[in-house]
Image (cartoon, rainbow, N blue to C red):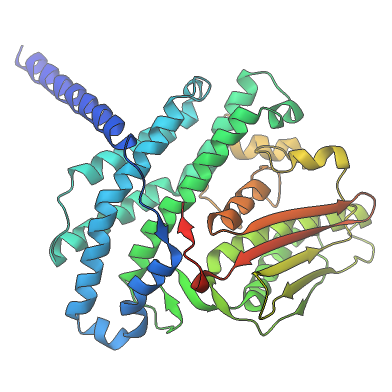
Length: 398
């Protein structure tokens, strides 16, 4: 009898907690997010970026900055998480996917943990709060693959092929909104955690480089993409870099890296499949354009990989849409694939998930830029990444 009483008590306690979380999610979901400009992130983080020797002395200025940022995140993150939870749950279609509901549970767990944590008003609480956010960051590192699996479940439920699913604009828009918001949440958490470990590079302010070099980033990305291409196809085309190879400007280097990797993977695969791994492969050109009067820094990736059909151009920004072997998608997000693979891992297949281009466009748009693609069927494709100058604009973090 005592066992039953204790079991019942624990059940009631969990039920009460769940109800309280649901109420708080609705409450915070009605609050507005606070826009944060990249310029303010740079200015706030300058304390850590300019003084590694002071950071080592545990300066009062550094501690004050970290506590200030932690308190802001303690207040802001529940609002952003609540918005995502509500958006995931208000769709009757999304509620039918076990994988999407798992993502929703992760968001609720993170929301509840932050809400239960005391306001980090001193260095001791701030350090503990950082540890909590680090664990939350790790928990959500599987979200991209899990949401992709959820989209796959929905497509199967609706009995739709890839073309029809790509034209289901409401579902596509909701997935797009989720990932754009996710970039913002990960940026805020990642920037804070990076500030706690000042870089030995004086040009780094958390995740932001004051002197990001598109050329240097491209060189590393070329090596990664070539490795993936050779692993899959046995060969990889040469990639040459032209234009403003000397350019440095403030930006989030990891965002440039991700966008370039996705574009180069597409261009390399198309080039090898069009011309054949045993034949001479035309090189891929990366062109970096900039000038004193330019509004944006522009990076062009140009290939001779056969191009894209005009009838397919409207679908290339759709989630799950891919021209790769369908068995790759089945392996990655099928019933038995699990969620062991973290997001953006170069050990993942070169293509087939159908998420590279839409996610890349979100990374560009997140900081006020754009990603455009122009293609000539029978010849090749030109992709353009437009990157705003972050130090000159009050660009808002969505």
